[in-house]
Image (tube, rainbow, N blue to C red; front, side, top):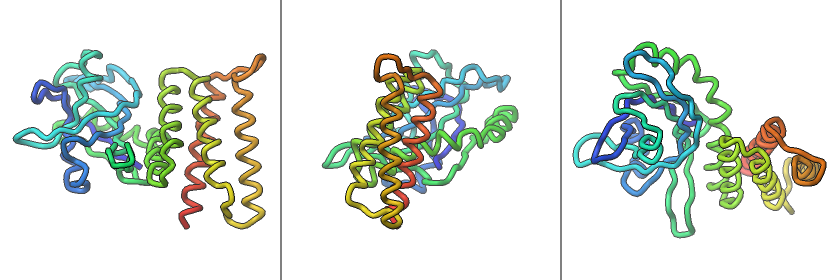
Length: 255
């Protein structure tokens, strides 16, 4: 699973920037101008007290840029400036995927797949450092969901990856019925992907196909028709189904 970083907000080249030097050595191909990173903006801390001032838990895609001197940075201006985050406040980010433009279009590559690492700046106050370490386990679930977008891209299921990302974004915006619609499209896309494929034997293949059809039907009942509804519980269930079946199918078919 991905990388959790905690860094003070800097101003570099008139941009609100976060140092991502921790990615430079393990990912030299990606840490350069023109590459973007999918992130979860988890929490913002006041520098001198360590108090959590906001918990946006918002997913965004930010540009990487390399100043003339110093470490590579992530340009989070599009979020930090409208939200009024001051220079020096500490930002906790979950970096999940590199977003890369290839000939066939946009694709994503997971960062530290199936691991969860942390990189906390040396100047981070003890209170913030301690709180980040204490809460790391709580980022396991969102890490799995967001890195699954990258796994789907790697399997060339680009449309399914885009649908999953949109569903996760809509959950974050409390648009639950909108989220369910996209999670349902994920299940539909996975169902197309496994058609005519054998998954662990004929009997299991048949059961997986039945599960996908029933899951799609259930999600269609969550707010799609008169007399039905889709609220947060239905959206979270739909998300768990979409993420879990995607990860299972991708792992199983890779064996």
